[in-house]
Image 1 (cartoon, rainbow, N blue to C red):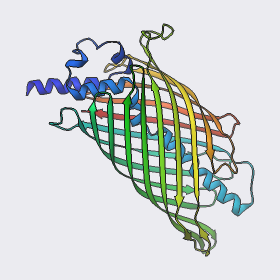
Image 2 (image 1 turned 90 degrees about the horizontal axis):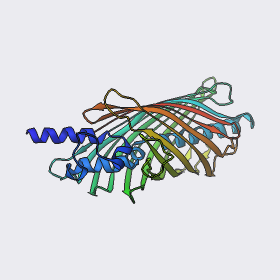
Image 3 (image 1 turned 90 degrees about the vertical axis):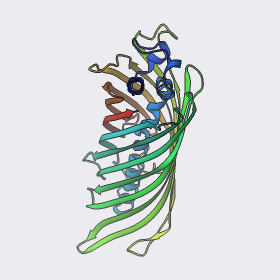
Image 4 (image 1 turned 135 degrees about the vertical axis):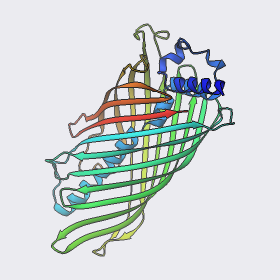
Length: 368
């Protein structure tokens, strides 16, 4: 029993180590990597490669959903009002993502259960022809399998719910959906790895918009959404390049996202037939620097800067701002017992000045 407690403590420490430590040396008091239990080796290896962070992040996913939802609202409002100019994407987002990863007993570090999701709240800026406030909640449950410490894959169901207040016309939109998410992480070399996900969702939406006293426009419509994301992540320290400061890790990343939504044909309350599809995607590149000062009671700062360019956007009829500067600044701290807390401020700024969204994220994660 005492040995098991000791191993659990080691796993908890390793699971929350910063990236650089794994590629430099084991921290003082931690035995060599190959002597640790399999789950500790996996957490340390893929965490050091920056791959677990990509798997646990919902930033790109939520950004895509926010842009698509706003663009659809702008297009519909323009059709009904005749207003075709003055549209912008300006919002403030509060996000609380979370995850818990648990190594199944007796699996020798090959099988895991993963619980993850998020709660967010979006406040749209006033002064635009359209203004949206929204909230969303999501919970995933995945079975994860690791054939070796360089590979992790998983699949599982999830449920999500979203609600939108259309402040510009007193309307509302609600959507409930269930789906399946699959993830694949692979450390390719000592300096590079890949994180990929596929997400298929089936949703039911309800739209209600008052158009006159006693008259409300209604539309109930189902949709199918396919989301894909891939990240090629590098990991470099001062041992790889002398321009990197001692005690910091550099993660260059190349990213791609794509989403396609197919709407079922439906009849609205005015007798019109509604049904269509749209696609959205971007390519991005970023540079992230993280401090390795990651001990309980210490704050490990990090910052990131990069660009994203839309290569497809079927909804850019009113707001065309294809290239965005993406910046993040934040800190992480070790909560002990396998816990990690990240607090960060991020923003996207379109180079044409039409997109300006900000987000504060408080991310809590545990690994056992």
